[in-house]
Image (tube, rainbow, N blue to C red):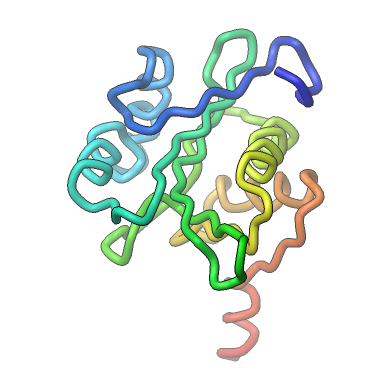
Length: 166
């Protein structure tokens, strides 16, 4: 794919977990050991019963040499800024925990490739919000590093909230 730094990297976009090849489903199911909300069953149920009609669920998956390395389940909505979109975690107010689905040992530079592709596909973007994430998790720190590597403006709202509360 054009714009990717290696011919061994590719990005696939799925609209429903039923479209996942076995290797992608296995990555999600491995992540489900951390939280039920990271697995294919939860996302299948969410897309079928909860997703709003004005959203577009998408599962961006980065593969390296045909091995799934990361996925960012997201939904695209219209922003209040005319002509812009907002990218949000694929969840709602019932979602207790969200995180990108990551292979063990993933480097933040690979996640940055995936974030750049999302930004390109949905430009112009008003904002990206991936919440609720556990600020103590490695996925949270990796996401912040990847956003910065992708050249995006990052506002760590958890730190801002903690500062305001003190």
